[in-house]
Amino acid sequence: MAKKRTRKKKKRIRLHHSFFIPFILTLTIAMAVGVLALAAHQWITEPVRSKRTETDSRESRESVSERREVIETDADVREPEDFLEEKTEETAEEMTEPPSRYQEILDDPVYMEENHIYAREAGVSGQVTLAFAGDILFDDNYAIMGAVRTGGDISQGIAPEVLERMRGADIMMLNNEFAYSSRGTPIEEKQFTFRARPETAGYLTDMGVDLVSLANNHAYDYGPDALVDTLDILREEGIPYVGAGRNIDEARKIVYYIVGDMKIAFVSATQIERLDTPDTKEATETSAGVFRCWNGEKLLETVREAAANSDFVVAYIHWGTENQAELDWAQLKQAPELVDAGADLVIGDHPHCLQPIGVIRGVPVIYSLGNFWFNSKTIDTGMVEVVIDQTGIVSYQFVPCLQSGCRTTLLQGTEKDRVLSYMRSISEGVQIDAEGYVSW
Image (tube, rainbow, N blue to C red; front, side, top):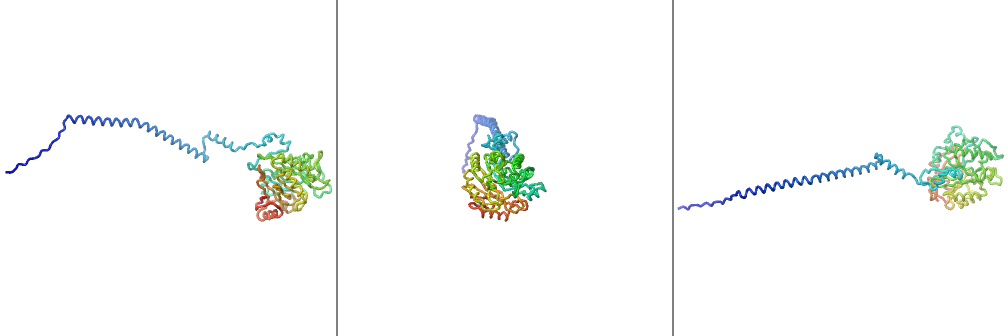
């Protein structure tokens, strides 16, 4: 008999109402709390984040703006008006140089006039450029004035490139070897006598001349009246002079220039003519004449006075033997005396030719600059340009020129080299480079 199979019954789990309802309620409440918590989070934290973002954005914009202002300032882009005014004031303060230590003198024009003090602006701050040339002549009776008399322009006699260098100096000085006058009579038995029309003094201004020496053997060629006219005419033209005067006090007077923070003294005298009774009369207490230094004691006293009252002393001396490059004994004797008395620079003229450049105890001496623009001869000449500051001489340059056919020109190339080579050959104790700069 077959056995009857039995089926195992699965056990069914039933959820009772007493369990299900509380579970649903709990879940619903939990979800509601979660939604409320999320809403609360958004409501509380989002405004803070928004505020921080605005702040960061504003700071970022300000930072960019600041950087833009810096960039615009560096590039000189137009800035707000008030900022520009402030910047302009600061720039003006930076560009304004401090007052000269001679400001008290500069503020007293009466004192300056009484003491022969003049003022100039420096081309380069802290430095002064001095330029010197030799003999000039404006007498219509000589060939030198032919082209200028016809054309009426000094550039017909002195080339524009030379004039440019003359005008470029802070102080330009040369030897005025004649009188300005329509009065007087020539000195008897004197071979050459020179006198120019008064109006030709304007050529000095055209040339850029700031100061002339009258300490020479031709300023007195037409006597005391013509010499006094010369003094008056130069004064009217605004050209200071040294080396001659209405009396000895004026003749030996020192001319001072204040340039920036420096006071420079100029002294001039003549050894020529070397006689006890020369044609060119020496000024006295009561009569007009030149400042003579054949007996050099008065000159040395004047140089010592200049040294005591200035920062730099220039001695411009008329000496030597005409048409000779060799130095004579009187030059060799007086040059070191000038240095010992306080001269910082010695410039010579009269021989009508170039003479050596030397150095005495650190002081440079050019014994003759020769004719600068004086006659129709063809002759080597030149200028000396000296740059100084409060420590002394910064540079000393000989600038080769040529007087030929009544015209003075600036030399270049092989002709420049030729003249510099010649100056090297006659000068001892100095070195002259290819541009004419002198060292010692």
